[in-house]
Each structure stands twice: as C-alpha cells, then as structure tokens.
Length: 143
Image (tube, rainbow, N blue to C red; front, side, top):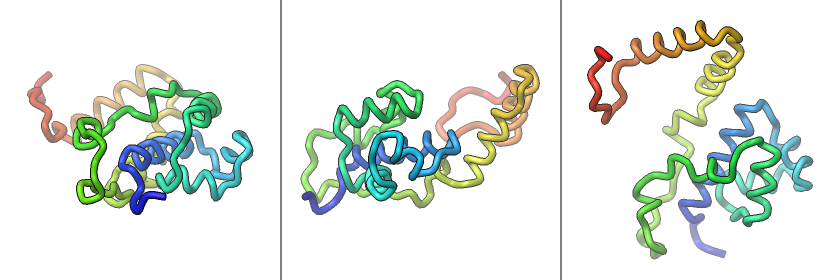
C-alpha cells in the first residue's frame, strides 16, 4: 500500500462524501446500498482506499449522478500531473474546503427546498450579488 493516498483518490472520495451528504444519506445507508460497511465508505471518502471502476459505477447509480461527477472540479495541479513521485504528492485536506462544511450543505439543502423556480433564481442572484465576484472572475459585477 502507498505511503500517502493518491490525490485523485482523495478528490474522488471528497466528491462521494459531498454527494452523499447533499442527499442527506448516512455512510451506513450508502454502505448498505453497495453492500459495504460504513467503515469502508469512510475509507473511500478519505481516499485511503481506492475505488475500483465497477464500484465507482455502482456509486454513481446509488447517488444518481454520472461517473464523470467524481472527477468534476479536479484541481489543475492534479489533473495535469503524470504519475507523481512520493515527494511530489500534495495531500489534499478536508480542512479549508468550503464544500465539506456543514454550513454549505445546510445552505444547499435549504436552497433546493425552495419549490418556486423564479424565487430560487432570485435567491441565487441575491447571494451572488452580496458575495461579490469570485476570485479569478474577470466579469464585471454589472452584468
């Protein structure tokens, strides 16, 4: 076994956790759905254990997403890498990642409970306006 988890395995695990929590599903419930223990799901989510292709497909079915979802938002420093040496691996951390904070998940869940599409769109636009431009966003705020 490798000394450190592969950054891609960590990213895929984060995406599994993000989707599972957005659905309000426990690790135990997900584990039962794919015939695993919750401890194995934890290892997948941390990137400690690599997820095989058939298991990734199974997860995509249970979580109702395409397999490509697990690789969405892959950081450039990872996606542009060839096979890294151990000295080159930067271990991704859950700390500081706003997508795994409870506050973010609660906000997303509350947003999707808004049933009226026009109201949801207005709330979305309001939050964007209050937050200001994203870092690296070259568009002006007057759009």
